[in-house]
Length: 197
Image (cartoon, rainbow, N blue to C red; front, side, top):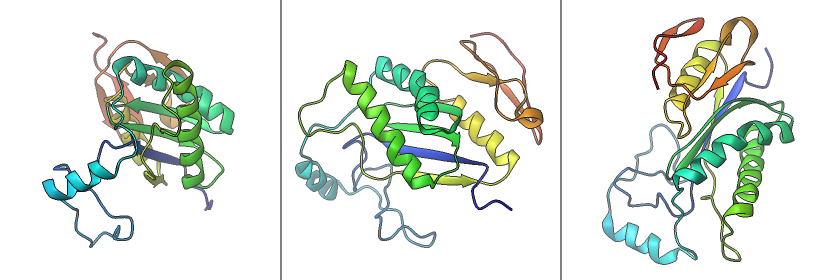
């Protein structure tokens, strides 16, 4: 068995968008084990976190989200990784890729390169950043999990879904864009059931 996973599902947030005390919940890096509690709604804690921000929080516009999604293949190419899918929300990004590199390093490079490209169109003030510290890197070891991650991300895309013509048979390699499809998840294939956008 390879010491590298089949793929990485990388998620990272925008700067200042999800602070401790947020009603959606957060985790403390030092307390990030399965048995540790999620920090829930705490308005006083959240206010202290807001006061500690050095710059305004970042919320991605629809144009920014579409730009991020268009950059996914180029960012992966630059890193020598295999692009699978990307989705940008108002306050976070999901990136699905395969790489012969350590996942946290891949996440750092992807954030840097996406931020550099965004700043060409939407410059930030000196010292500001697009992204929160850290993020999540889930290691994907099997095909079924890869398919599920692909569909999960695909359903969140701001610029329409990507569809794959042969996820199981030939790996993720051929893409179409622009039309929404509902997916029928089978253990070894994705099939489209509708072509209405």
